[in-house]
Length: 236
Image 1: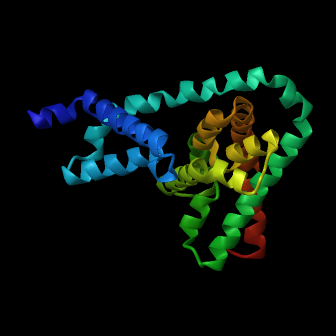
Image 2: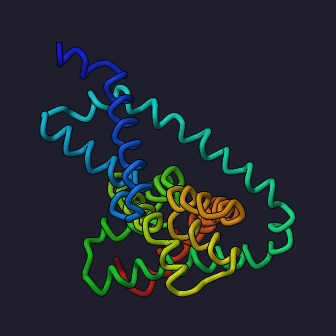
């Protein structure tokens, strides 16, 4: 009976929603980054599947339906951007320049740290698109010879850390500019960061959502070029 229930899509859907809303409840109550709902969901679901020896495919029979909502959720980010279109037009050049440079710096910093710590080549290449939202990051990783699973993991960790601590770091360093705060969240923490930014301020969320798309475009352009010139200087 239990095995039959596990194979049903309702199992994966129910488990995902229950642990997410549990994390959301704890996060709102305790106001601590450790209770971030996505982090809680990852930890509890992985622990639950491991404890009861449930394979990922069985869970994903229902979990995949949650993933389908990623597309509509991403498109929905256009709503706050449309509402703040006047602001976006006013700072178009600044936004383009900052996201382009951020993309380049993120790539160079990843490569630099990889060299310092003598990181495995496959891991290093796979981590280059870590500051880009998952669908785009996976495409970039395939293009430059990375491992998709490693890239997806790096993207999730990056997004979680940014979503958990981004606004707190902005307050710690007294960054009061809405433009800077919003772009920072989208540039460093993509979708998860944007979701957090929207809870802080709609204008920040709009800027963060725009930064996601621009980071994807610029990283897709910059990553292959940087790797090409890097191989000329230092054979990988």
